[in-house]
Length: 65
Image 1 (cartoon, rainbow, N blue to C red):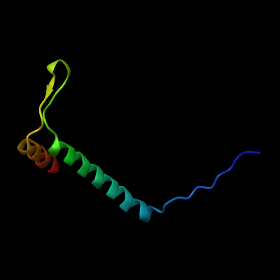
Image 2 (cartoon, rainbow, N blue to C red):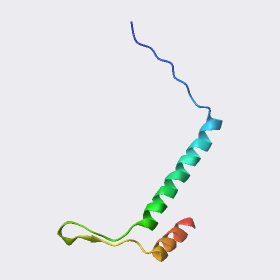
Image 3 (cartoon, rainbow, N blue to C red):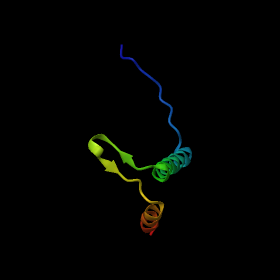
Image 4 (cartoon, helix red, strand yellow):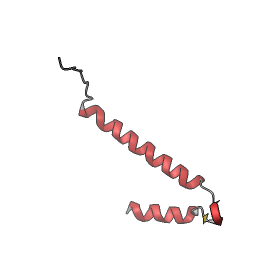
């Protein structure tokens, strides 16, 4: 006898707000990470500079167009 299972689906009318909320939360998390990042020096003195807030603002402004 094959095992069976029941599956519940969320109606599209409820799914769209859930997806929108997920996208917004992800965007906010990325922006928080970018704005709070600091310059890091790693192994063999490899250095990654934190992005300046003015540069980040310019990039975001350009992407919004």
